[in-house]
Length: 223
Image 1 (cartoon, one colour):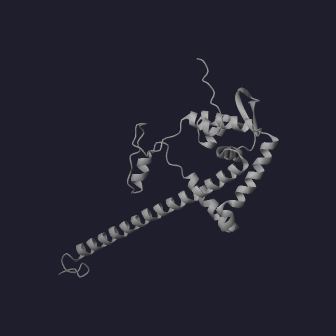
Image 2 (tube, helix red, strand yellow):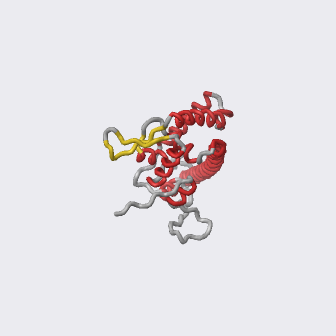
Image 3 (cartoon, one colour):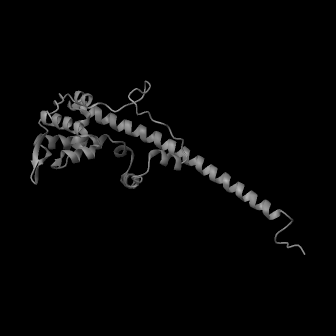
């Protein structure tokens, strides 16, 4: 006697095939939507970042200070070792030295030996530096998009999302290509050779950084 719960011969297998196809289509649609969202978020973040940098640069020009000095002033909230400032600014020691030279030249900061280790140099804001820092913070806060477009509740939500993203650091042994593959995105080979084709963006040399800050790079010490 045929089991009616199974239906006609092959009916169950056919139903399972339909379910698998439906699941595959749903998964494909979700992945496609995820890629679209990622692309749109990336585009908006780049646009927003560009606007923020533009506002900061215009303010820096108005105050006749290099744009990178604005970032340093925003980060310095007390005596800070040059090494720590470099980590916060995500730049190498030669860049930090050029920034410190610029701030000192304008009377906005001074170097002092660390009280616990005189080999370590701290960078400390002067009275003029603290005053300019407060002025910069007020001006930047007034011109930031979230100050003009979001209410307090929306800003709190935005802050929570930003902190969530910042805390989601990839594993130390995970390469960017691995992340792209895991997200289903195509990977792009980035040239690392200085002889790369025209149009390839390469990091500026320390001498170029110093020149852009209006600082004469120090000669290397004799070995």
